[in-house]
Image (tube, rainbow, N blue to C red; front, side, top):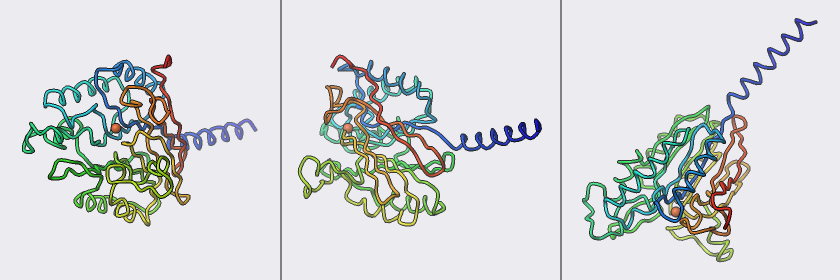
Length: 293
Ligand SMILES: [Fe+2]
């Protein structure tokens, strides 16, 4: 009898540990807009403590890491990169980035020429790495995309370029139809922001959402696209589409660029817990740096 009980306990423990191995946690944060004013350094310290206590496997940072590089000098923009990366070393988990519009260098600063070695996306590539890539983790496939294009008249538009579209097609070709996929972008593929504030027929423009999201979504027609994570609009929304895909627009990590609440919400991020090989829970976390507000 005793032998049977021990065998049962051993098997139960083995099954539990197999199940537990597949579970993992990650953080999705966006719109950090880091600089050294308005209490941002203290806020980031508080957030880092909160994140470390949550013990995630990794952290996804969905763009607008910098306060702003669009209008800055080279010295100011590089300083913002260094200051953020210096703080980020205190995080215990690895970071995966996506580029935001404010991470593009000197697009609005006409004193800097377009052939400057850090112009546009090159500053980000120097400090944060490739603009688009994918990786696998415990059976899930993660894809980070750069969904902004810089026009000749030095503006940005939300659009995935044709080179990335081809890369994306190839990247997901090798996936089985059941592999759960997560996409991270800065500018939303889909959002209700314009309708929430402007009524049901109010359309997004190509600075609020990307022009060719349909082309991206078509590629996933027969794939298991479980989660789309996006930033940019500082507007927390969660959309559950067709019992298949969840779209999360991150709450702004910096609130209103470190000047209080944004859309009535405190500075925060999202904790995502993968609970089996196809499902997850999510929670908005207010890291409460400025409780006296
Ligand atoms: Fe932003």
